[in-house]
Amino acid sequence: MNVAIDLADLVAIALFIYGLHELNSPATARRGNRFAMVGMAIALIGIVVRTGGIGWQAVAVGVALGAAIGIVAALKVKMTAMPQMVALYNGAGGGAAALISTVEHYVAHGGALTDVIAVSLVLSAIIGAVSFSGSIVAFLKLQEVMTGRPITYPGQQVVNALVLLAILGLAVWFIVTLGVLPSWGYVALLLGALLLGVLFVLPIGGADMPVVISLLNSFTGVAVAITGFEIGSNLLIICGALVGASGTILTVAMSRAMNRPLTNVLFGAFGATGGMEVASAGGPQQVRSTSADDVAVMLAYAAKVIFVPGYGMAVAQAQHSVKALADQLEKRGVKVLYAIHPVAGRMPGHMNVLLAEANVPYNQLLDMDDANPEFPTADVALVIGANDVTNPAARNVASSPIYGMPILDVDKASNVVVLKRSMRSGFAGIENPLYEMPNCSMLFGDAKASIDELTAAVKAL
Image (cartoon, rainbow, N blue to C red; front, side, top):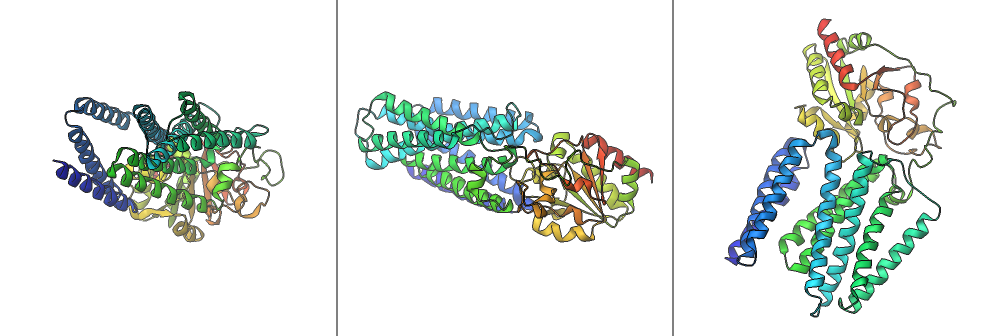
């Protein structure tokens, strides 16, 4: 039986690896998810069988309960709230690792721990707790329960350093004594890690949430992998390592896409002062408003149109309307493309997920490097709520907080039309001088309603 379960774990691991590989391309991402789902089902069945007569019923109930919650969440949670759900899932994984470590500690407290187990236990507890509380704060920011702006206070770095030193001191005490320390010591260690997670995410602005979510995901993976050493599970070790490694790679890639060191993302308190110094001459921005009928004419007689989606499209749930407009333009012979910035939205791949839901052809989705050469030959760039990733201040205003960040070169298109509810700045709290450029006009209103108007107007031409 044990051999069969080990083989099942091996199959599950292989499916996870293959599924992760298939996520490299939007065209194969769904298939990759299906393979990973099958792998997870095999792994869960193996866990239930492995428990045998020592409580498999309770494990089965836990699996069923978790599956029910996951299914309901997948069906009920809107695509606009997907970043928040991802943050909660990250936190759940980290919290589970910390709970397992806590149970292992108190169950094995009367016996001697080995060096490896003691180190693994304390590390998974710390990292898991940091991931849990940090993910909860990220969720609250994304849900706008609390402000998305960085929360800072005098002496913040000193406080963080003191909390970290206290945690490290307790961790060394735990390892040296092989877990033989007063109960308050472990509780203090766990509470300190939870506090550190909160303090870690508070000073990070909403514009950096995609990077933070990715980093917390890697934290959870590392915590799960270390937990595997505690309970002797090769499945957890390998799967946790996969999550940790992929999350780390994605975090580094996104930091590079923003042209900012990861340390600056984590400790720079980006946007804390509002970042409003990028306007050209101070005072209210002078912009040119337009109408749906005028934009429809512009689109209908264009040779190439590039849609630039952002969080505004997600909030308005306008992805299906965008696809309907694109279909109308393609019927008139217009070439349609979509430009996706690596950090558009609130999580990695947010725009890709939304557009895939609307059945946008994968070959029309261009990443930033492929999209930017297309803008100079585009007749219209239609920007749907993508504020910060289209801000030319990143190229030419040294005082801007986003100076040096690669952006989508929408301003190089012949015409730029920006769909926004108002002139309120984006999530980063930074004004966008693009809106004052002579080739740019603003179409104010709800993104979905505006695009539906455009579609109707194009049909009528």
